Length: 361
Ligand code: SF4
Image (cartoon, rainbow, N blue to C red; front, side, top):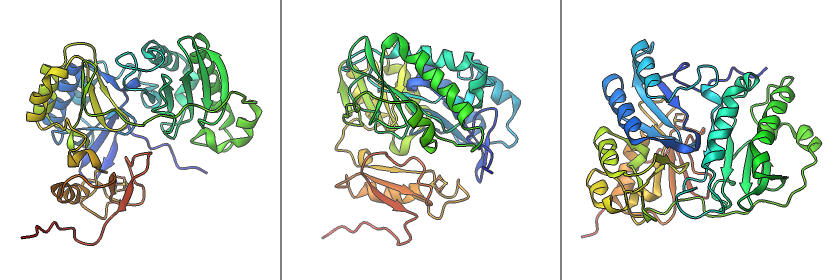
């Protein structure tokens, strides 16, 4: 028998060493700058003052009182980030972050909204596991290498392929068929997982086989957004994906068109803010791929997480002081490797040796 689905939400917080933790889903990573500021204000009033960016392009708030005050839940709901009490943990939709802003074969923003609305409207889909992930790729191939359950990759403006647990095969569909087919497959998965309690589509190979997938493999691209100017947008990171109030307010001042986009690589795309890079850097954001912080990520680690055997943030600070590593490093406090990049990286798990930086004289 599987353990209960423990994926946290606002209505089902996770109990951590540093208090309650809540996770907020942002379909396609989209959130207005005003909402982002409001959430960091709430994190400052109730929690540790930090909003974390997640590897599913969502947000987390930690260090909250346990039990969670109803006033906090009401304040989060008032931001609009909790449109469904029954489906809050299944709105896991990662999309190409730059879709509709720069590049790609088509603008997937309408499909993101359609899929989210369709998920919420279907009562049976509240039974999807909280770990279930949809990806929507606008043809550039940036998100199809994430570990996902169901996906869509555009092959043109009006057509694409639905992907089932893998970028290697799928079903050719028109763009208008994409969301209905994804929702139908999700409903089928809810039924097919009943006996085993599978968390993911990949755990049901017989069901996948029955779908008679035929279309050619997906196109693969770079799983990243370069830092700096991207069209008229600014692309930035916050060190260790931890956003504070000063940074959120700088983002609010810088963004001039459309919502902020949180990327699955725990960065931020800020529409209309390409002229504000210096101000963003002054607020502590990383605007250059040559920065050390562009090459280092870490899970929350000790002391916030009970499983952690290392203070991952402290180790990351020491490594960052040494300059950009020759390859991406992810530091985890235990073997779960939360937030580890899907692409190649140096995997440091609970490093036990003391890490120091020596300066040659
Ligand atoms: S990788 Fe381990 S230590 Fe780090 S946040 Fe996840 S469970 Fe905690």
